[in-house]
Every structure is written in structure tokens, then in C-alpha cells.
Image (cartoon, rainbow, N blue to C red; front, side, top):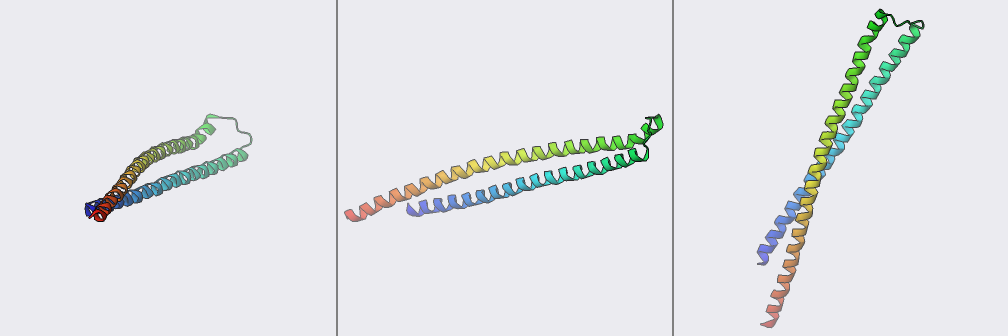
Length: 142
């Protein structure tokens, strides 16, 4: 009985260690996803600033702009590019949020599993202690 209980305890412990390793891996993936999100935001901000500087230079070069159709057509590629950047930013943020939510959900699942395994290991330890006390009492009785 003790050997079986010890084998169960070893199996539960190794399973718990494996789940803890998976939880740690998920935490690292979550941190990487959050880091990628901040890198993406920095890139978008940098690109936006660069385009903003180009707009200022363009405005300074043409202080007497009159919004003629030709001038508006010259600005159209800049506006279209800005639209693309904002759409890219929105898509990236949504994708990162979805990935982050998935990883958080999986992390909660593994935390719950680790808690369950810990409770099972505690129960096995208690059973071992109880059976050890009973076996010790039997040895003393004989």
C-alpha cells in the first residue's frame, strides 16, 4: 500500500512539475506578446512622427497653399498611407489582444489544474501519513 501511495505521489508530483513548467512557458509567451505589442506601437508612433515631420516640411515649403485640386491630389498619397497605418495599428492591436486573451485563458486553465494537482498531492500525503500511523500501531500491537 505504501509503495502504491508513494508511486501515486511521485506521479502527481511529476505531473504538477510539468504543469508548472507549462504555466511558466505561457507566462513567458504572454510577456513576449505584450513586448511585441509595445514594439509595434513604438514602430507606429515613429512612422506617424516621420510622416508628421514631412507634412510640416511640406507646409513650410508652401506657405501660401490654397487647397487647389492639384495640391489636394498631391496630399492624397500621404492621407492614404496614414489610413493604411491606422488600419495596420488597429489590426495589430486586435490580433495582439486576442492572442493575449487566449494566453490568459490558457494560463488560468493551467493554474486551476496545478491547484487541483496540489490538492491531490496533499490528499495522498495525508493518506500516506494515516496509513503509516496505522501500520506503526499494528507493529506495536504484535
